[in-house]
Length: 369
Image (tube, rainbow, N blue to C red; front, side, top):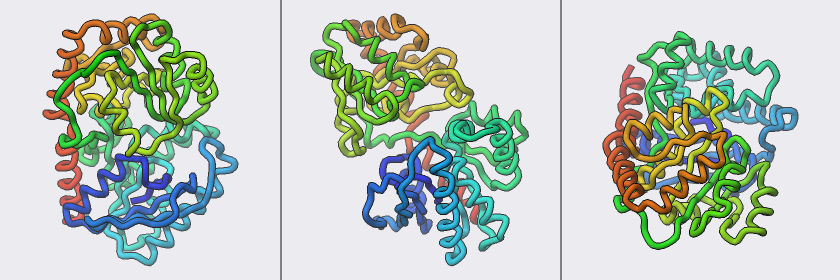
């Protein structure tokens, strides 16, 4: 597996790798620790090995990042050249060039799997000629990839219209396991809203800060980093109901998630990627019997409306978001009904156990062929 982060906080690649290792595959993640947050490689009891290239680089700054990205590709190809590899599993579009090169150079003739966490535009928007570049990457993936993992059925429909063969597309959602879920609903007094991840405008951070203003009994906890970090710090210093914790590791974040009453997933529906995505925090909320708060017109809203497991709001309206939070905080019967529907939908359709069986089945077919 090729991964352009240190393989510490990104749960989707780790879950996939551990599932394949438990199924008897020999799995190695070649990871780029661009944050320099690790000191060593890692090995696990199930056989998974993580090797890391520790070269510092920023995010969203192509002029500084691209040369080091090509160094990462060369590092990956050196490993592939001297290893017997049956499959190269590329996580997201920024690792695909190394996978394409391995396939073109016929290094052990590996199967190529493209794990499309997001549409390529999510990464390529930082580069000039984004549409042209995305079209080139998608055309190359359509021709060279032996399998493409996508995050929901909406991705399947979208790629099908672009000429992708449906038999190559497999839906693997970034879902938590049933064992980590929680059947019970809301607990205790007060109402706690939790936001974690990138502190960006398009993630609804400013929207949440404004929406909770003046709501009695409602607290907002934020954890993460991004361009709105200054705004978040200022808001937390002025308002006792807003708390900022900075960037947290997953082991520190999980207790906060389990104790939250609401984990909004308010991605601005302004891009194709945001419109059709299924963010991991939506599935995490469902697994913990927490109703979801999602923007209208998105695939998230389709899931919420299909299962009756949350509220759909107008992303452009602070008052709409505020009223939705107030309803969930004040109407205990509504909250409990949505919470029960969330957990039921998760167990039946969206758990990692469901996704794991698809993943291991795919690799059984690929490697047998």
